[in-house]
Image (cartoon, rainbow, N blue to C red; front, side, top):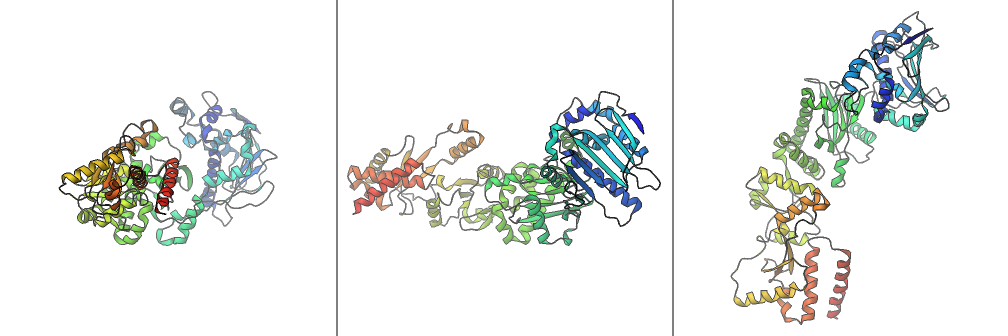
Length: 592
């Protein structure tokens, strides 16, 4: 039996461990299971053999313990003394100097060999039962209650390997919940290279929780589509199939493996729910590390495994490390190359994917100039004819103004007007498109985007008006001034189609400013007027006969025409819709 003191030339380190890593408490399981896997790997390298390698994590709620057991290389009493009480704290003074006054969110587990001591984040007492694989040595038992003193005595283990036994504190009793522990293991240890089992307390066996041979460690040529889809569903709990994926397997100039999936989206905002998991040698590190993976790539789902990155590093390290920047740039290049290859070799599939992938591509273009330069030639516009054409193709067919709609439903009448003139309308229905059209205008000075409810010139007829026509226009204007809201302008034109009695035109510039201010915050939502114009179509039979009716019918029909124009422009408020229905019934009654 031996007693000793952990060499710490400053105040007790354990309270600092608990304080600094409070937000990452569950990381202790990752550290201890990873250490167990390392011990097994060392045993295999030195001794080989056919023995089944395994790590068991056992929760005993009654005894209030968590045990991490491995059949790895084990330790002698001298090695316990050296590695547990000396090596782990060899850098503690450096830690105190560099980290004590720094960012409290900085991770320190993994630095200075302190992985084992993460056990004290949730434990009153930590025990080690270990037997070295060396012949003729005795097992050893080590225990410590979180102070600087420890006990080292003869152990009881019969087979080579190590048990780490955590006596969980009262405050951390939630870690004795089997479902919680299983969740942590599935999060951090799902792809460790050694089988990890989770037997119930008292049971000899339990289910294996991890896949020791993850797909991204294989060559793409060795993988089947079904395997990619199964991995995607299992990891991301998404039962839709991904659209496609990019498999990276790089050995030089850095070690990088991974798979990025392009998910199928059901609506625009779902794009924000992507998760890219960062691994280090199959050990999960974190989700969505933007210093390694650009934020616009985080719209995707996938896993990146990069052993060249330290297991635990501060964000300031990642931001300033040249290798991290090269890795990030290479991931972006692989994405752009995949998209370009799809466009050139599988254009039909690329067009089919466009509705789902365009938020990612557009956002990436606006965030990263280099990404834009790589993909600018494969940006396409989907039109109301279900065509997917590039901007140069649209310009060649329709001229330098890109006419676009944000809703095929509300703007259907406008779309029909443009179709009758042989002008193809692009569909840009997302909030993101408000930013994107302005971005594209900065890149193409000869092209201007105009929403179809702001583009009257293309659907009206230019003509000389007689005095009689001008007088009729004035009278129509007075009739409609009595039914429109304050601030709405009235204009009478001859539209090339006679079917539509009226439409509403919005100023493109004012509307864009208003949309941008609305996205920036509700406080600015009403900072700009609507700048609406009600355009009456003299070519329409209803408008042409308006002035021959009595005043009551004029007002009734004018309100109906105005509401119909509003309905093709935007959703109507419930009370206005009620009025519209009552008025419609009244008009039908006039026909009886």
